Length: 345
Image (cartoon, rainbow, N blue to C red):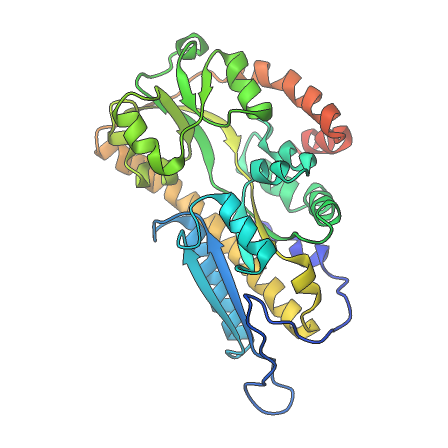
């Protein structure tokens, strides 16, 4: 696995300032003798409620490293869905100081007005995990991180790129060809380039809250959905009538952004910054490895539970996606970044 470049992104740190405690807690007492790290509490949160989720593995590793490297001076409190199951809730808490480290998708970041991040959400942009890692762990990832920090006025600073897996179609019938999805409702984004893609494929993008999707598939409210194995199998979507059939479309090698408040980060001591960046880098490796392992595990579990899985010729799907890449990149002003991604294939 490639080494994260997040330390490189933040290698030029600002000078040490007076400590401003995160999570609404201001603590300036030392935990040991002279030179010991100052006390700090970090509230870290993701929106998944399953304790077996890769997000949880990533934040637990973040906690372990931060607390170990600081000899306990930094305390990390991990929340799995308890601060909010919607990304909008988590980002609001990040801005207001109720959380210090949160995980969000590119789609939500575009809702904050940073449209360039939607580049990572383009269907069939990445052809493998190796390709994806070479992008986010390289120059493109650095440029996107800088854009987010600048355009958010330092509200958001990326300290790691995680993944939510490779997404596939699952629904009430298998897809033998691209024609089979025409006219079907699919739970996905209902605006932006993702929505436009599914419309051009012939499906009908439909909005259903993640927590309500099991019931929607069970009661025929929506014909299908799309996600990665660890996520939809953990929620038992594959056991519903409209989730039984999975077709491995592999249309999205997903990117997730581990964020910290830039302003709060800048207010920490140099030692605290270094520790948190080391913890973030460790969390990247732990979360990705957990996800890569769970994808195969949960695929096999779905098969054991009676789900039916098939492969499909992806060429017709990719052919529809490619023109959308170019149009979206022009609209976002990131044509150069798109070309760099293509060059890394």
